[in-house]
Structures are given as structure tokens and as C-alpha cells.
Length: 132
Image 1 (tube, one colour):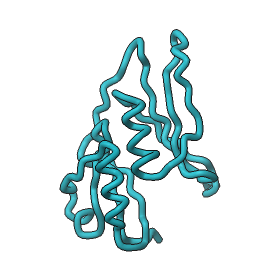
Image 2: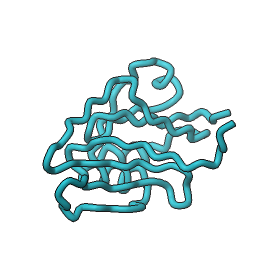
Image 3: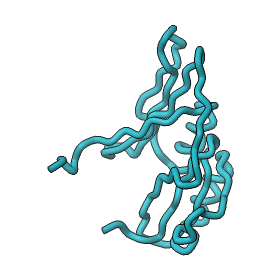
Image 4: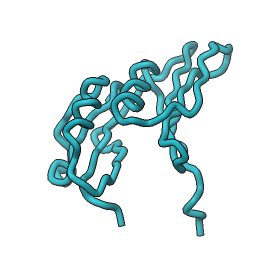
């Protein structure tokens, strides 16, 4: 059995770390947990964002010497189960911070939430349902 309190890191390449950070910090309200942008040869620039004290975070990376192009699909989803109606002010902040509202590939997410792409095209779903 896997310990449910384990910390989870999701790593994704980014075209523009500043734009991705703006979306997740100013838009979604996450904190910057770590940043490395010293341009060390052979190492990636990265920014880690997540909820303070949380058990998960995103590691957004960019290798300036060999950048990867993000390749999200319509089914690469990061879903937040909010357990309440979607706050219009949160959606507005995400859009102002570089997000784009899109119809969901699976209509379930349009019925129960809002789908917004981040600046790299990855999809964030704000779901009004609760998990569990």
C-alpha cells in the first residue's frame, strides 16, 4: 500500500517560466516554493509552485540550452475538486494572468466546472464537485 501522505511532484516543460508562474501564482493563488534560474550549464531553470504546506507541487522547467516544446493534449488535465460553485473572480484572475477558457474535450467537465489552459496549453479544470 502506498502512503497517502507522500509528496507528489508533477514536472512540465514551459516555454516561458515567467508566464507560467504568473498563471499559477497570480491567477490560481499558489506560492513559489523554489526557483532556480542561475543559468548553470547543463542544468534546467525551474520554478516550483504549490499550496503552502501542501503535499503536491508543479515543477515547471526550461532548459535554455535545449528547450523542450510543451506538447499537451486535450486530455492532459490538472483537476481541482473545489466542492463549491466556481468563483467567477478566480476565473477572471486566471484569464488576466494568461489563461484561456476553453470547452472541455469531455463534456463532463463543462457540466461540473470550468476548463482553462495555462500559457503552455496545459488544461486546468476547476470542478465544482468534491472528491471522494
